[in-house]
View 1 (tube, protein in one colour):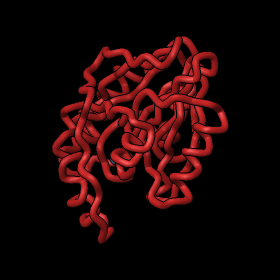
View 2: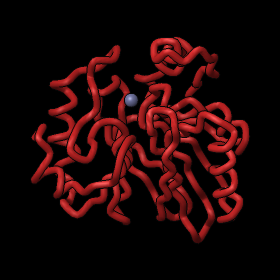
View 3: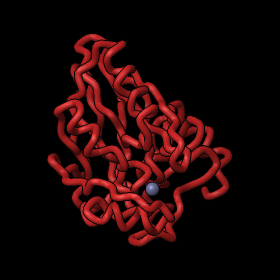
Length: 212
Ligand SMILES: [Zn+2]
């Protein structure tokens, strides 16, 4: 499968489109578009590549990663897949907005497909494996494309850093332990696409990430 990265203004969020060029099936990961121009960029990408959106998938349900969940679901007539452990965050997303000083109402996120560790998300001939990495949020997951050697890590592992754990439901010790045992054990050449900032690799983080 192929992956395209969009960087959007709200908290510098990375939204990804993962797609199988043969079938045209596509998943939109963490729709962080917060204005019309950003939403147009996603629609135009889908149109230009003749893609069919089969799911919105959330690595977790913090507002920057889920602000356009409902819009994306409605626009592409698709479903939302996420961990049910993060459902309270999705239901209180307007509260999260106020916590970050954004005076806006955001559509609550309902989960159509609850994801758990070990689940597989099919996208055409490709698949993403769900790896639970709670710690940044209770329902945090990473998405692993073993065949193509890439990982979408959400806000667990960043290039040179890890996700914050001071938000409700955060657990620093659990996050470190889960990254160490579940992500850093993947092949070192695996490309990591994080929720914020530049891509990296598992091997690079093993050698240089100060948290490990
Ligand atoms: Zn987050």
